[in-house]
Each structure stands twice: as C-alpha cells, then as structure tokens.
Length: 285
Picture 1 (cartoon, rainbow, N blue to C red):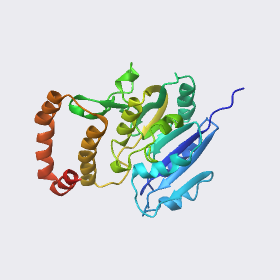
Picture 2: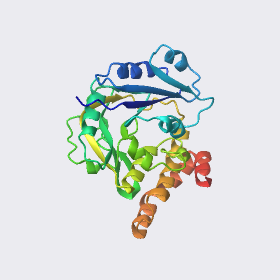
Picture 3: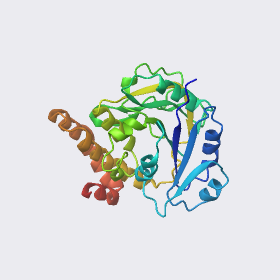
Picture 4: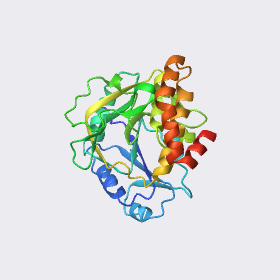
C-alpha cells in the first residue's frame, strides 16, 4: 500500500485567543493521519500563547515582534521537507475530511498543478460562500470567487481562479521551491493582503496551475486578525499597485489608462479624504 504523503500545516496567530482553540481542534480531529502542525505567533499580547501551551504535538515559533504574515509563513516553509504545505489562518475551522479530500485530489492531479483550494464557507451559517479561490477581475481588481453566494453555486472551471486563498490553501513544496526568490515564497514586502494573489500569479508564470476541490470543506470567521481598519486600507492600496507592477509586466496601455480613469483615480481621491496619512504613506513607499 502506498504511504500517505506528509502534510505540513502552517498556522499564523496574532492576538487569536478567540479562534485558535477551535482551529487547532479541527486539525487534531482530521481523518488524515500524516500531519505536522506548525504555529507561528507574531507577538500576541492576549492569551494566545497560554492557549497554545495546552495543545500537544504542535511546534510553536514565537516571534518577538509582528513580522507580518508573509515573513512568518516563510520561516516555516523554508525548513519544511514534506511534499505538501497547507497554509491556514487562525480563524479557519476545517471539516474533519478536509485534508484527506484535498490531498487525494492533489495525488491524482496532473504534474503541472501545484495549488489546491477547497470550499470555504462562512462559519456563521455554513451556507454562504466565503471564497472558492482568487479571481482577477476588470481593471486589475482582485476578488474572492463566489463570495456571498449560496454554497450550491457551481464552480465549473478551475481556470476561473488564479489560485487558492491562503487562509486554507494546499501548495506543492516543489512548486513553492520553484518560485523561491531570495529565500522567500510569500513576498515579505507585502506584509499582509493579496500576498496569495502574488504567489499564485508567480506560480502561473512558471507554468503551474490551480485546482478547486469542492468536497474539501472549511469554515472561516473572516476578519479575525485584529488588524486596524485604517492599516488594512493602507495595505490594500499599497499592495494592489505593488502586485500590478511586479506581476503584470507590461499591461496593455489603453486598458491601464481606462482603469486609472474609471477606478483608480476616484479611489485615490476617496482614500486621501478618508485616510490621508496611510494613503500618503502607501504612495511614498
């Protein structure tokens, strides 16, 4: 009988006391037997670390400061030797067969598929879709595919998404190594937000593809990170343009001009009015 490949799970915490117990219990209850759990804490100031101490068979990395989502994940991914890496946010709860379902799909995928994502539902009702993957829309806008729709929404074509949302994404370690840049897998300059879009686009530029696994279910609280709203707006603004400059090498000029006129300039004016300090900071950076 073929041995089951090991899956290394990377969970991030930052003031996650309201979510982390449920998250880790869902990992402990997985039907899949070959799982290693790594938790990276970004200097939580609540009871997160005390809660983590109650869990056995997990490896905890404690950072002395908040180094961001990307850098925290990179610390663990660098040293992982397993075939697959599962990234998780602390406010995600997995169905007991999530890992079994998504690994089974991965093991039967074509060799050029290196990213897998499941059906992420809102934990509030288990019926509303949180995300089925990351979608690139008009004017270089980024969306969660299926967000807000009923779970019966049928996602027919994995090509509709560029990759999985990193809140619960399975990546081939071989794929991650192929996009490794200066020891980084997730771009630390982004800190947080659209970092999974960036990774997926870089992977696709190397010939890798994404596969959606409908039967792999999980549930997301969403907005469980305790990050200030103004800071999120700043990161969203900054990272959007960083990603465009990085991953869309030479966008078509007329389309880019249309985007600037119809979306970007009005958005910039609005953000300068409601969030001047952070918007100015993003522009200067």
